[in-house]
Length: 317
Length: 269
Image (tube, rainbow over all chains, first blue to last red; front, side, top):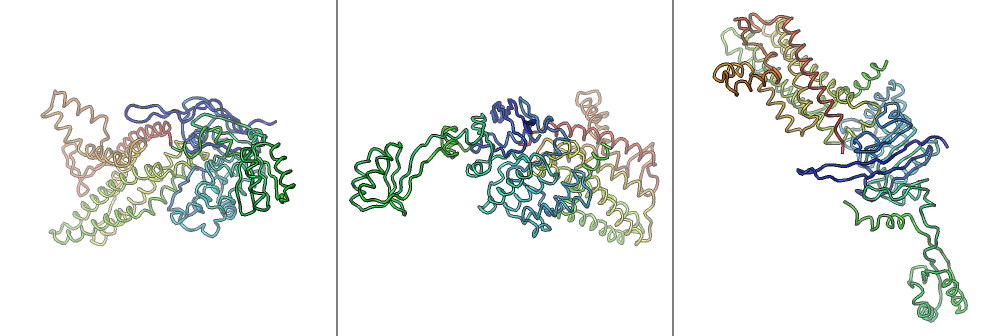
């Protein structure tokens, strides 16, 4: 396997706050690595330390301890920075500029000549769906439009590593789908994507591997399939039948699972496979119709809650 | 090659800073006030007894200086603080540029802006003088150059404060230093007169060495070798302007170096 694109080793950040210089540990000695070409999700509830970690990697915050190597170089190395594209969380840009002017400025920093800047700006604004508004001052842009400018500016230098801090935050479902498509497109082009999110559905759909950070500590790193337990947690049985059969089965399997009614029919949720076998046998014998039997395994959300130790919304700071 | 690439990156920041300044309505209003003050000198000139040119020159230079100082404070403090407050810096620092290039690029943009404004205000002043039958002349150019140098130094001081403090505090600190720096002659007289040989006198003398000497740049009416200097009779020489430029470059350079150090240590949380 080729060298890791991003290697983080015992990275730690403490903040001193207030008059008494109270010490708060935001990131507590985390270590992980991101391999070339993978989409790596950095997951955690709000206030877990995702943004602080990303800011340390991008040279915005100085780590208290530990080190990181990005594209084989230390944090802040100019040659490495040239190969990184970064989208900050809730990005703010110079609102007196248009998106085109902003991308030209970024292009100048990358040392592109005028023709290359114009070509790149037009191409990127087209790609993120902002071609129609590219000459309007950014003060008139919606949050979704600013997020698109943020993505465009991150891609000006055609980076090998794209770091996105909460790229779907505040976007409507269509905007979120477009960002997902863009990340998939980057993956298809062989780029490495390291992105943070607290929206588990996005990570579920996109990530090859994830790291879960909770209260500054890294809880899990690995392939999604490995982190998620393969064990079947419950089986859902959907069926239809007469009222008498419903009453009979509800009383016979009262302790073995949960019974409820949905628009599609009767629903029985069993915790064990043996119960499902007995239930289906009695259902068929009683003249009922079986619609579906669906095993339910652990979802990323359940893993997240299991690792976090409580519900995500209870941890928000 | 590396130096050219570094300058190109700073120039990218400088151009953006210039663009931000010229699109700022507050700046346009301040320039209009400066021009209005010069226009008012035409009216005052009419009220005087054959002293129109003198009044236009005095009020004109005062206008360039006072409004220049207000603009330099406004730009020096505001443009860096705004980057931090609005978090626009978060998207720029991770780009392939060093932090010092960002800060110096910001200053370079301020220099371009203030140069354009001083040239504009001086051109308007020259126009008013020509309309009244006077001439602008090389002495006025020297006086305007000195004002320009003062503004460059003031912006470096303001930028130093803005690199670690809030906009209001930075503006107050920089303005206080300018007021003290403009009154060094009075403070020196106080320290060597009434307070001579006292701890207070020694403290003031020590402060005068450390604090920026803005008096050096606005010399009209000051005494040099028993001669009163003014733009109407005998004014300071080019060598004086050269030494003032050296002082501004040295002091301003030290302020920018300190600002860069503080900026490097800063966490953008």
